[in-house]
Image 1: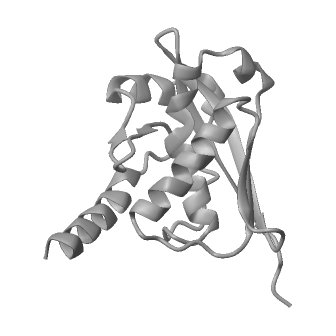
Image 2: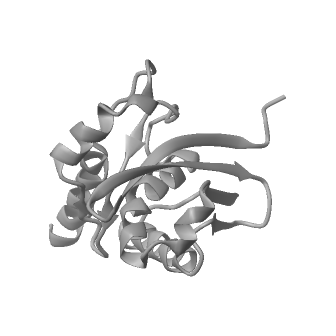
Length: 167
């Protein structure tokens, strides 16, 4: 019998006072009342959820009729500036897209990700130097971590949709 619940996690990075900080982001999809719920970002949660729904509609991507719950682990994020938390938009969007099987990434637990999404689906990422500095920090330890050029997955979809509308 196939499992009714799918779950994944990844490490999100956000900028705080010019430094990259890490936070574990996890989520699951289940057969509940269809929808998206983001937990752990306070008032930012609703704005991000609505932005993701808007982007899916803009790109004409249909999501499965499932309940998706995305969670940000650290409670200290509630004390952060809302602008700092926008760096978690891309990792949350990637996690949601993976749980909804929109992008073909099955394993995210060895990845870290950071970025902001515009309303037309463009991705703004942290400076590569910050990513390099982060990767050298001790607490990553011996576990392999990879930077995924995730914006390329969505850029192709956006180009396809623009081409369909223009052609």
